[in-house]
Length: 383
Image (cartoon, rainbow, N blue to C red):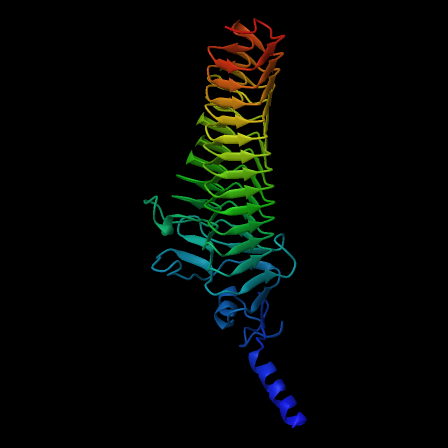
């Protein structure tokens, strides 16, 4: 009886286990199915992905993978993907992004499509592009990668990709410790659109319209620098937590951010015509310094701020802030032609000190102040 029970247990144990397999990819492989050794490795990532089952791993060694193409991902799409990871598997490089490259084509071939539950780890995605002509079609978004909501990129570099609509570098998905640089979009999100990012760097990305670095989505512990757009040089309508937003620019509004919700962020050295650091949105416990505009709101234009510090910003009207609502904030060392600290707006429980002005209102001009401290401003405290 004991032996029979043990046999039943063993049978049930093995029948319920899921054993994952590993498939190998090398440009020097023999491409012999089932690609289960380096000697028999597939020469394209596509072949190994096709062979893999849910939960398996595709292991890719050094090389440039720039041939082939897969359509119908996302479903119904006519745009070619150099690689389509269309099932919940992991595709991982052996030696990282510096030596493992998936290369698309700038006019009509994105680098990678990622399905829900799939992961891509340690690749450079470069030179991918989309179709042109529609700002809503998936065929026109995600030049480097198009990711379904539950797909993930980790330790990847996305560079030199472009999209007509959204997400020059990547559209959607979740990104961990990735670098997005020199990507571009016609409409939204030169670096990324609709994604969730952790510990990522977005630099020198551009959008002709909104969100040079990022548009929509959420960013945690990220750095955004040197990105450009017409509106929202660094980020547009996104949520940012504990991020560094530095040296971004917008032609019109929001050099650092436009319409974003920010908490515990630092915005430094950004520029625009109005809202050098930020335009609109809500900021919680943020620091805005050395941002500038020729027009309105060197630090922030028309935003809602709580427990923020604005210092060393400059503008035509409102060196620190123009309009909006500031609560429990400190403004010092800002400068402008009028309203060195703030121009217009509603301020509650704020301290305005050490600001300067060329014309009138060194501390505040035309604003409404409640329970505020205004002192030691050059050019007069109030006007």
